[in-house]
Image (tube, rainbow, N blue to C red; front, side):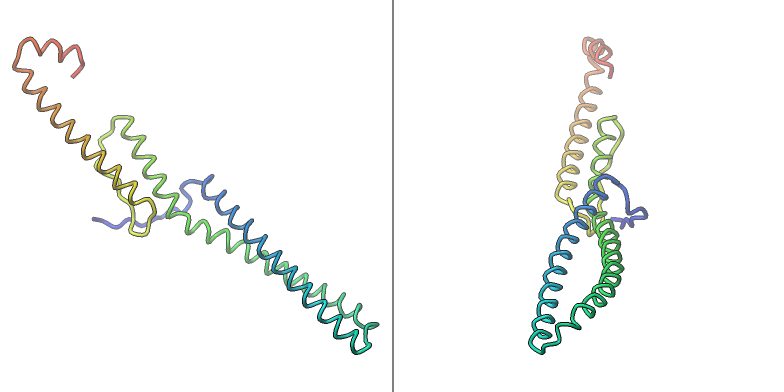
Length: 170
């Protein structure tokens, strides 16, 4: 069996973009919760320590400077993480979207009456069991078509059947 290499990672834009968007959204929620919690714990620890040393008057100017520096660095880091998560989501989602696209295309081809051999998926793709089930259906349908063709050939020798075969359009 030949190996298939994907050249286009975006085959089902709505599915891949929605899934990647959900991934980024959930990732952002996690980052925000962890960031706020870490910031609050760190800030309260610094304030408690400065208060214990009676240096609270310097604390607010120091914290403002820290906030500006942290805000800039975290914004850049957050942007990089979001872009990376989105691209990684699309990259891994092609293992789902590709097979869905291939199976859908095969079903469309079957409904249009095109000759189909089988559905081929790559080694790391998802939905292999669905492709195997569809391949089984295709194989059984081909066997039935072969039996029907054989029976039609046999029936062509019977004069009364010839008329009915022509009426049926075979």
